[in-house]
Image 1: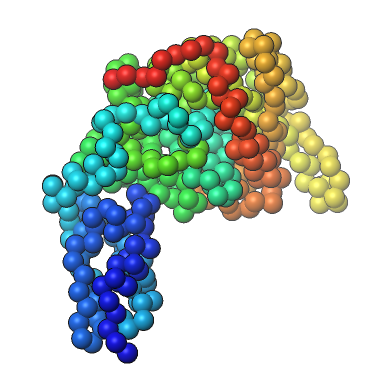
Image 2 (image 1 turned 120 degrees about the vertical axis):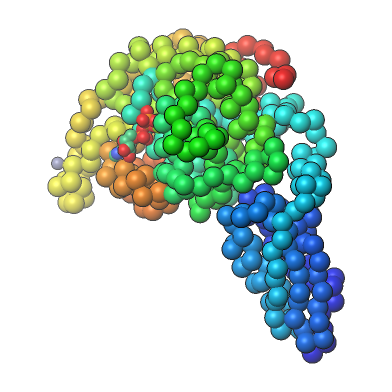
Length: 387
Ligand SMILES: Nc1ncnc2c1ncn2[C@@H]1O[C@H](COP(=O)(O)OP(=O)(O)OP(=O)(O)O)[C@@H](O)[C@H]1O
Ligand SMILES: [Mg+2]
Ligand SMILES: [Zn+2]
């Protein structure tokens, strides 16, 4: 068999995406040299963006697999190198697409990414669980989904997605979101701390800087949807996001038990501070399907936390804003939902036919099907952010 041509090898390499940047390694300047010897062994050097890149094994495996498929290739001798400072800055330029630095792509005119901020009146209502499951639900529909954990009080999102210990790769001042097995890319405010065990009180200008960093300095690529897990209640995060993401839409998570007026007040105030539209309410921990009756195929719901909280919040918000704020879904109590979060395998992935998963998948479909045009009906006009 004749030795393969360099064109064939390059074409094969162009099918390999960098796992974090999600673009072909050939476009990113990561393939340093390629040669093939008379015996058909390919010798090549692939440059990692940073030394000790956590995904070097994935890259090695994908490159080897792609080259092995080329007829005539008998072996792959892959060396890993590291980009020089110059190579990294030209990569940054490629990724920033010639744009001015520190621009938030989601607030640029013509932005096509839908941005949903998930809010709640208080903590512990399942906001993070709902957020990660919606994110994965949308990824399962084939959408490119990014997730920002902006909860300054606790960063549970990475653990729920199975990447608790991951640190993002940084190419100079450009940060790569952490890829997860479900396809959702994630960045958490907890990942921006210099040390993991450090306790940081995220407030004021420092918090604002961290939020901007997660939006502008993270290479998100072309996302279809960006979800943000907000801290409960109102506060600094809401003010910052209002300035930086005026087009975001807000989803309120509540339980049947919560005082509707209070939830609506907090979440509603936040949304109006942010000039953001509240698009719906998710009632979580709505009921417990009675184990006995369910086993007999009957629908019997135990109303552990009372009834009607979601409806009351939705009604109050509808009145306040003068547009319909629907209840998007009622998520039952489900042990496998909690377990999925604990082990980093959320229920819509681990057990998609469970009743709670079905509701969350439905809500995900409703949200991704929403026409972008509706987002134009904001509460006020806010100029796009400047730095
Ligand atoms: N529908 C549900 N069924 C069973 N357990 C649930 C459900 N929703 C949430 N939980 C569990 O309740 C706990 C709190 O949920 P979660 O962390 O998502 O809430 P949160 O509103 O983000 O809380 P925090 O304010 O601490 O960030 C978690 O252990 C989670 O697994
Ligand atoms: Mg949370
Ligand atoms: Zn029963």
